[in-house]
Image 1 (cartoon, helix red, strand yellow):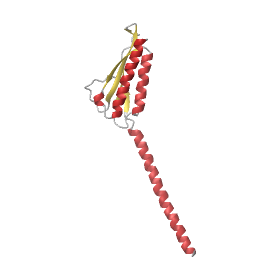
Image 2 (spheres, helix red, strand yellow):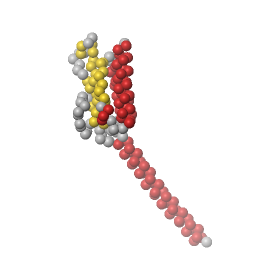
Image 3 (tube, one colour):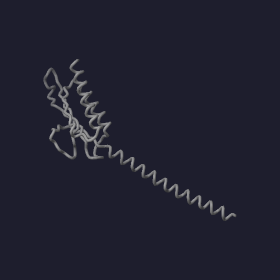
Image 4 (cartoon, one colour):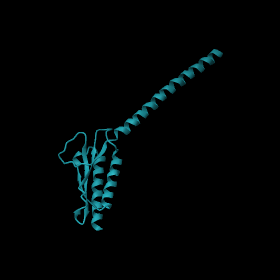
Amino acid sequence: MFIVYAGVVAFLLFAAGIIAFQNSRLVAQQEADESAGRISSLMYSVYHQSFSYNDERPEAVPLFQFSVRSLLEGQLAGGEVDKTIALCRVPAGGGEMALSDAQSWMLGNIRQSSLRGEQIQADSFTDNALSNGEKEMILRLESAVKEETADANHH
């Protein structure tokens, strides 16, 4: 009888070991997938240069850009020149931001430029958008520029 109990206990310990091993493999795979997901979502970068509509660069596909000019009574202020900020899609994992972070960053910079009294000129590259999320982001950024320039004209 003792041998039967010992056999059952050994079998249960063996089964528990197999289950624990399989569980650790699943957890490791999930962690690897989550890490890869975070890296692949970093698909957006900001460039401080101007893009034209016929620019085709695989390393940086422009989605939206805005140029600012500091005005002082209609003249350029203190030797400042136009500054352009372009949001581009880059190969997966090669960017600094995810889509939502990129949108927030651009919105913040549009608002800051408006608060500083800078003239804002925006260009959208809707044909370069691959997803609905990118198209919606472009629309939100266009709307923000229109709102900020309308607010600036009222003050």
